[in-house]
Image (cartoon, rainbow, N blue to C red; front, side, top):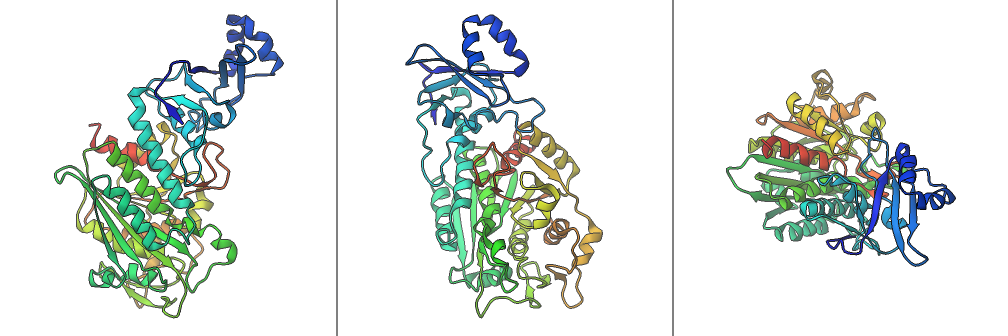
Length: 452
C-alpha cells in the first residue's frame, strides 16, 4: 500500500485540465503519446507515459475541480489502475494527508490485509498521522462489514477488548443480568430476547487531569425491529446497525494513536434486537438509569433506548464534551441522503468549528436543530416519555430530543445520526461499511483541546 522508499519510484504528476496545453508545450516529446491516448486531464483521468517498451517514464493524473466536495480524494482508484511499481506524487502540499488516505481506501479489502502490487511513497512527515487514520478507518469498515452471525454481542465485545487492551487502555464489561444490578435496565430490555447477551463495554485512556471527552456508540449487532418486525427488505443491511459504535471506536483509535492529551472515555452499549417470548413489547413501560420512565411506542426504536442509559452514565461524569454516534433514523437519510452526516449540538460555538473543519478535511456533516417544541411530542400520559411518538414528522429531530433528555449535567453535547454505509453513491470510498464523520470530529477535538 505505502512505501518509505522513493528510490526508483515513478513520478505521478497532478495536472489541471486548463494546464494541459502548457504542459505539452513544455514537454513536446510527450505530445504525440498524450494525443494518441486522448488524454484531456479530466478529473481522475490517467495516462501512463512510457520510457520504453518495458518501463514507465511518468504518470499524469487529471486533478479534480477545486469546488468538488471530495477534491483531494484524487488517488482512490489509482492503486487498481497502475501497474505494480513504487510511485510518488511530485506536486502535493507536503502537509496534505487526504490524497494518501484516498490511495489507501482504493487498496481496502474486507477483513484482510490490503492487496495491491502498487505502492505509494508516503513522506516521513505525515507517515504516522496517515497510518493511524488508515488503521482507524479500516477497523471501522471491517467491523461494519462483518456479518451478524460473526459479530455477535460477545464477539464484538471480545474484539473491542483485545484491540484496545493492546493499546494500553483499561477495558471493562457488564454482561446480561448484571446490567440490571448496575442499573442499565434499557440496555438489558432491548437485548434480553437474544441468546447473545446484551452488554456495556467501557474503554478508558489518558490522564485524569486532561480535558475529559466521552464517546458513546450504538452497538446493535442486528436489528430485526423486535416485535414491530421490519420487512425483509428493511433487514438486509441491519448488520450495520452497530455502525455508530464502529465509527466511535475508529475515532477513539485516532485519538489514542495520535496521543492527544485527553482523558478519554468510550461507552459502547451492545445488544441484538431479536424476537422471542420475552421480547420487550409495544406498550411496555420501562425504567431507565436516569429514573425517567419510557413507554414503548415502537420496538424498532431501540437504539435510542440503549443510548439513553449510556448517555446517563456519561453525563454523570460531567465531561467537557459528550459525543454519540448512531445509525438511528431513516428520517436522517431522507433529509440529507447517504453521504452527509447530520449532527445536533448544544453549543453554537462548537457547531461552527465543526462545520469549518468538516469542509477542510472533506468529511461532510450538516447541522440539524434541537427543537424543544418537537421534544414535547415525546411527553406521555402514563410515563415520562414515549420512545416513538405517533407522528410522521421530524423523525431525526425527535430522536435527538429524546437523547437530550438524558443529558442534564454536561454543557457540550453532540449527537450524530450516521448512515455508516456506502451503497455506491460515493465513488471515492469502497462500497459497504463506511467511516463517516470521524475525521471531522477528530479535527474538531484537536481544535477544541489540543491546537489552542
